[in-house]
Image 1 (cartoon, rainbow, N blue to C red):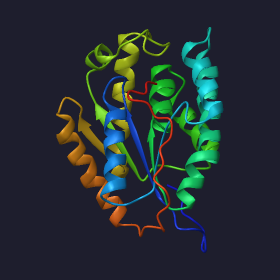
Image 2 (cartoon, rainbow, N blue to C red):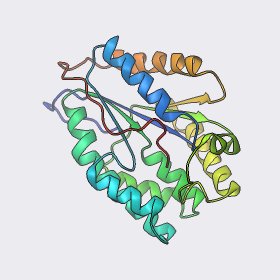
Image 3 (cartoon, rainbow, N blue to C red):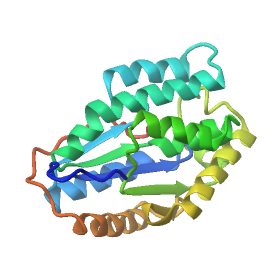
Length: 233
């Protein structure tokens, strides 16, 4: 995470939810947001990547439902969305002390484009860190699940990434787990086959520890962004 300069406004808390398709990220994000608003009395901004802004929605449609997009173009489109998302949604909310919950962030790009598309994890990570000026979450919740099970939970027509094949999705799962294994305290890895309630209890405990380590700014209005009931990469 970036460190505010002396005299900077109180920084909020940034939490990302990661994992394969169909693992339940949006369900857990929504439950955590409700708990933070009602129990911790915090301003909460919920959002997603791609699609957390009007521009992001256009980019999301282009990369997931448009015509042919090369792997390199795909990575650049996600980085474009991320740069705009951080600049217009995430960083302003953090600067006023809000809790920002995002369904996917840069770790998804590293897993999906870096490893899944074989573009190179380090290259894709550098691109995202440049796009966001080094902003990392305070907590990243990884919901781990067999990709075949997760994809089987989805309804509707599959998008480009959902159609990428079993080997692709296995590579992305391994990439997430490998990053978590060396990523330190930022990561919380949970078995997504557990009950919704058990998973949420673990998430709340870790989120509370992060919140308690940072004094809260004056609370603003509880808000929510465009995260859907099951946002998919």
